[in-house]
Length: 155
Image 1 (cartoon, rainbow, N blue to C red):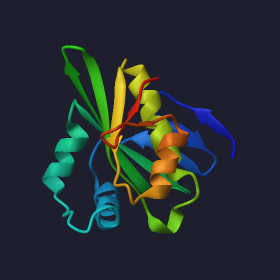
Image 2 (spheres, one colour):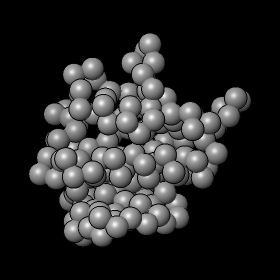
Image 3 (cartoon, rainbow, N blue to C red):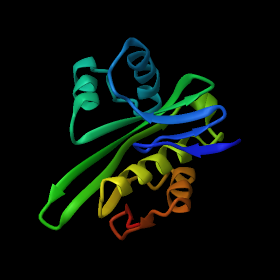
Image 4 (cartoon, rainbow, N blue to C red):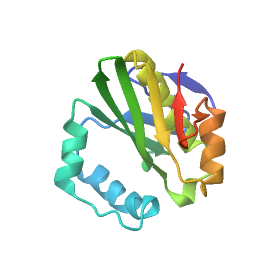
């Protein structure tokens, strides 16, 4: 796949693109409704909460599209503290029908690029130890396992 980089953390390939959701529409809501059960069996869709995420100054919802359709998402949360601006990645999920096609990697690299643009000092994420493939992916893009099982990217 040919690859080019666009601003604001976006990565685009011939068929795969990642961008930050600018507004909540029915397409995005329907995609989140489909993705949430694949992320967590206890997650429930809340349109008002999703609207808050999309319109938040401290959170960005990254959306992956494959051949035009939304197939994945992840959230980058940033926050200032006295020692610098920090970031956290949450709710990374890719539709099971498109796993293994680089979607999660594209989401992560887009968020890492965005974190760099924002001057984020460290970027953390957590993962259950049973998610072996996800952990391998996180490590392959530069996250380091910490004693707390929290991962940090310091790039």
